[in-house]
View 1: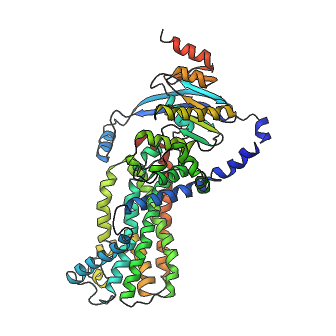
View 2 (view 1 turned 60 degrees about the vertical axis):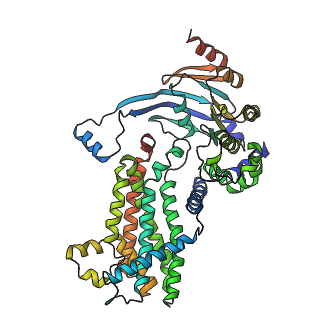
View 3 (view 1 turned 120 degrees about the vertical axis):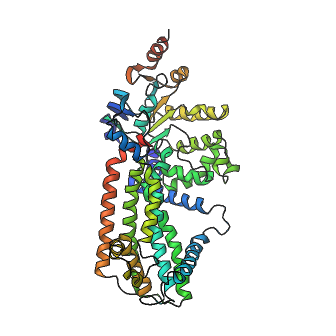
Length: 276
Length: 252
């Protein structure tokens, strides 16, 4: 009897939290293994990909759209401007587009195993964060190449990522729950992401935006991703503290998305099983 | 420990459980369909009651068989007990760890290797990493698949998958074991091995076993009590001999 109780203490997770954390870790590592299995360069792609994207965008936008020629960003700084913006936006777009179908894709599991449903959208957000961490290596390479010395402002990075992850997780929860009931969102979201990308100053520089129609400018500056990109560029590129406005907006969006995502997910999750 | 025993806590308490499914005659998979139906006021589903006001309790250490014809609600009942489905009405309480052998290999990812899947599945069962690490060899030993550990699961046969799944789920003595015809997979030797292990749990006296099978003889052999569910109603609950006798007689 004593032996049984003793072994019971170690076999199972002591709390739901501990169990969920272990599941999350297993799921994220599963995503990681599957993503790079059978590719020769493997994980190096996570670094190469943002670098190559940056090169393509730098060529296209500095020649065709004449970005980074005059005004706020110098030609030397433009690639860094691009890569920081792009990886930040990718973190959002990747986590939301994968979280979207996470519940549906986990249907076989949800139908047979008792597991907290929120782990699946959260898993996708965490996996996007892992990829983001690798793209930071690419940023470091670009900074090295252009001789940009990082400053202590980088200590803001965890704050920025925490807020952005809150925003992405909230959106992911919301989308994954809605997609269970309306599969259309799957098709719609890729369009939304494309539109969102153009309305976010990933490649547009401030001087260029100033020439855009008024309405477009409102769209660009009222967009949550603008605030997160601004935050990232402040600490990596402009090497200043983020303004109180940027901080407040990032925190606000993060809070709103999390609350909305949590409420919708929580209200609908017990009905998932009947629809998947 | 003495406290819980003197209080006579039931291992499983099913209290007035009703399960209602919406029988969507067609599945609405997009917004357009949804709004069209909404506009036409056709968004009402015909209800289907898979379980109607079912109540029963199972004491720790009891071995209970669930019998009933196909579509009678046995699997729905098991899924509610396993915590996968939430009952529409009523409540279901299970005390302790559940090892659900409902569909072997449910938590597996076919792209991952067996080694990776053991950890993934173990996490879903609520084991700790240290525990899995400690008992890894034991699991592999029982499944007899050491030579294929680093092969993706998609190359496995269904019997091999079932072996690993069974080995992981039963590596530790659970409080509640749910067995749903899982023994029909795998070869005769492995089936025998599984039954032996289940028998071992039953004999230990501390494991509550819920057993579902269409093989009435097997139920009679293993269980000491049986519950007969028919068309969502609890038809009979009592000693295994009586219930199985009545169940058999309905066909005559």
